[in-house]
Image 1 (cartoon, rainbow, N blue to C red):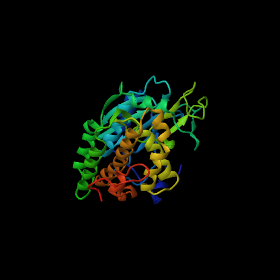
Image 2 (image 1 turned 90 degrees about the horizontal axis):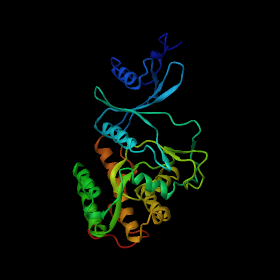
Image 3 (image 1 turned 90 degrees about the vertical axis):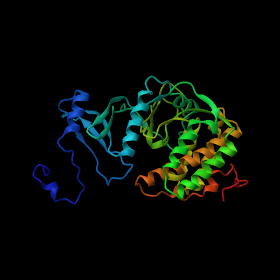
Image 4 (image 1 turned 45 degrees about the horizontal axis):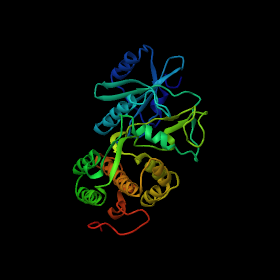
Length: 329
């Protein structure tokens, strides 16, 4: 009632405009919901912020969630999420929100997903996804490819991303990548898709699924596939899980969290069939990936993160310490 009377215009809150309503018209047509309405939370925008519209029928029935990409970074992320969700239908141990629509409206990239079942429950702190779930994510694009790390598409992609950064960051990370290839380039790894933001707050479990995370009659629900890419080394998601728990949840410094992740993820990595050489290789590659992702975000206008200050020498540090790689000081 206050909004209809114009009272909201007097409040010191951020506002958003949707132009001539083209986006809402696009959503109504794509979803075949002529009376569709939406709600959204507003926060200060940034280069990596993807607004989400909560979509409803007039009676309050939830229809879905529309994620919007509005700049080069977020358009890429939203398109990547839609591409990943197409591949998640019919899996055994994993469920993802159903993709309802995807495409462009004016200059916006749009990905619309269905609500999840009301029975799903947020993960508890002691829940760790199983190796079976990790492997199922990795196989979303088909059979895994086994190749040497140095000859992989993942390394080529990292090289291209580093080349887009300004100096001196580009020079520093290029040297790290050179050392990574020299030290671990001959190590053969399995490559497939990774979720890219494999963290407890992007997941829920079916109540029928055992708390151990092993496959059961239920399934693990996973959303926010914006960072999903392929190919990536099998095991990246396990490392990212423990890195984020240490850094974000436990408050560990980024450098310490990277080392914690390598130790904490070892059991899962061994279950995935990785030997010591493979674990050392993907731990170093994941550290570089985390630092590189943050630097790309900064270059796109995002705030600088603590991980940007992790020394180059630590990115390639052998698990448990040891010699600093040649050329990195």
